Length: 380
Ligand code: SF4
Image 1 (cartoon, protein in one colour):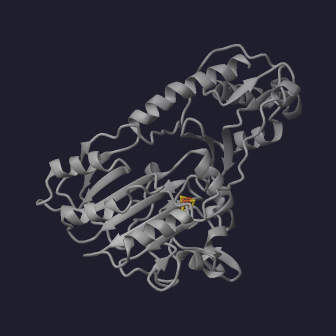
Image 2: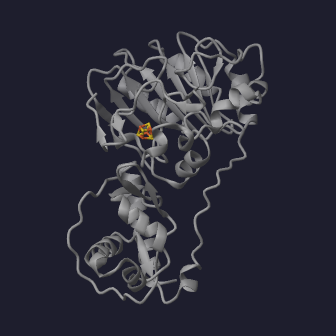
Image 3: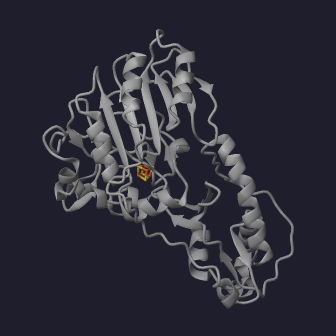
């Protein structure tokens, strides 16, 4: 393995530890500080396969899919990478002319400093590192489910767990809208014991009668709980740290409604990783392979959609999800939606707006708070 590749893989290991400690840590580099090193202009260079440049209307972004980071770059650097990836600095300079020399040097220094590229003796050597596979496939028919409970569950949970398990679902979010008693929470969680579910996230309405010690006990007893969020709390605070991304307890002041998610207001909720990137390249990650069982047992694509596709108590989930009307939106990726298709964030953004087709084009009824054409966020 080439020295630069080894360095990157070592760095990845260190960063993974940091990632586990800090959670979904990412930052954006806007300006680069000068850095000095000798570049052999005769050697060809290449972007590391895990670093993907995505062009937007006003700027581009390098997605560092291994480090879960992203970095803004100007569109002309994106175009340069697109055109000259695998060539030497010398051949770029001879192609673009002497007047572009200083700018090319600056760009190459930036790319080397952030370990986005590596140099090797020949193009054949560079080609030995294959591009990442961005096809998205999972054997699961349903990858994530949301189960909403008002006062008491309106479906037979044991059957729901069995049906979802059969469809390959391993992750579920359970939302309690009233103030549930501890016994009810346990009764629901008990149904997931001995199931093939991997993780459970809980959203529970704040109730001072539910003691914090009981919440800790809950997380200790049910090891599938990945995250327990108490919403509508007087204060934002973390009651229990996440150990390896699991078992955390957080209190948030926000009130969770039946539509569940609020619109994107900044980059903090963005996900930079190979799974999300590949899914967003091929599908709409907000609805693809997701199912919601609402408070009445109705089956829906998403919590903020009115359209129901049958009721769990009357129709098997497998029948509902195999209907084209249920799957229709799965394939509407950001690349096909007006405005989003011009956005540099389109493969990291989990947008909860539902696209609609108007005048032969997929679009959204409400604008995004990010203005793709100026590169600025509106204040909420
Ligand atoms: S919703 Fe669309 S326009 Fe807004 S940040 Fe996401 S991809 Fe960009």
